[in-house]
Image (tube, rainbow, N blue to C red):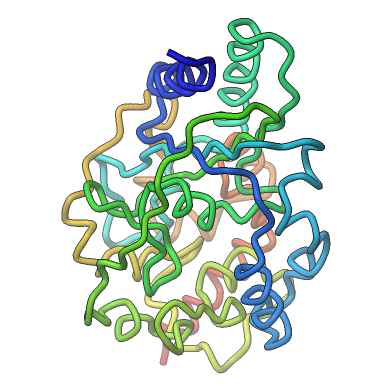
Length: 313
């Protein structure tokens, strides 16, 4: 067995031991096709007020700009599909936000991963990323054979759907590379396009972020949500799962087994009135470890107020 084979096998075994459900490895190259698509997406203004998407363009498309001498991009998926469901009468929260902030949880796992790799292999220059750095995670996931990018813009796995967090490890270590996932199994299905109430998927695979309910409830920092979206939010107060809920591939989704990602009980059970009456101090204490803190108390109150106006229509 060569060192490349040995190191690749070590990585696959370590990923499972650290709680990741899937692991794929791709050669670190510049993403020229993705660069052209991203540039056009930005030119069309689909990023809305997410100005950070316009920064670090060269870093997004070239892993060697993030890790000098990068040879491999390791992509890791962690299931977050919950066993428990929210009270159906409450303001809707996206499933990924039921538990603690996954950024912190997975970042710690990536640090452990790198430490273990260095202890087994020797000096390895590498960095871990999870959804908060200029890395095109879904493109790398497809390149490493984990799934395809669906018409709703999500990475879809054939065995378990799309309810996964995606993390990346970029390293200067040569490895065995998995074959790219070449087929699109969405076929003629257009359920996600038809179900999106705000028209955020104008054509297959194209996402207008400025119209996405997740953007409107989390990323948009304006004091008000534009009136054009009144009557279209369908009860979502933080994020949105509609395009995943209607995806036929998610009939294969299975509940995760991550103890640390178990739902925060209040998120499942708080009523609309309890959310509306929550003070800023209680919000900060209750949700200090939750992704919902990203919206801040003011943003959540804005979202709740907009939903209340919708009901009065």
